[in-house]
Image (cartoon, rainbow, N blue to C red; front, side):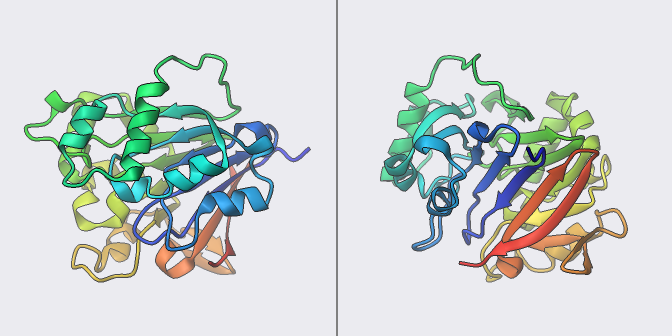
Length: 280
């Protein structure tokens, strides 16, 4: 039996959807955010390729309470059951809705999960390690959903991947001061999913004073805003030389807008491989 773990970073335009699939324990697939793009819903690909057994998703983790991180949740819940969820507890359903100009069907789904899945799932023991950090409202002078994102660390086969939601610089600084233990996780990070879709306000130099990952991945739509411009170059300066090899090229920053759907494999011995796997 193969021991490696697949991580799929889907191209969902402005949004995020990442699937973690341990080959040694295929019933423990984890979907981190469930954004979609037009007619493309990652859940359809996962079902078509038999990555979800018996139409039961082991875990759904939402990093941020903004629509682009869960825009496909209604389709997801139509097609699979969800065994466990991981949602930040720093906002109640009522508080989330108070922060929104519009209450969407998708937001109602998230709040329904939040109000339903309230007991610890001690039976849920995947073969990979997950550590989640988030701020509380009192840690910030003013709060918003971005800086109350969950920062997720995934550790498997000696590799640490950081998936950082929509954290902005002020949230990162507060996180480093409030949760000193996060610094050790950051130091160990080899693959960093850029916060706030790689926008300029998500970049925090203090984070990269702690680590030099081998690759940074940006999940975002095409460049139309000034906050997107030149950020691949900014992040590239934070990556250790020579970066990674994909398609026989050395790369430091990968983006879904240019590279499409991305496929990262974590192998025993802290070996990692990168590829494009399919374009919608």
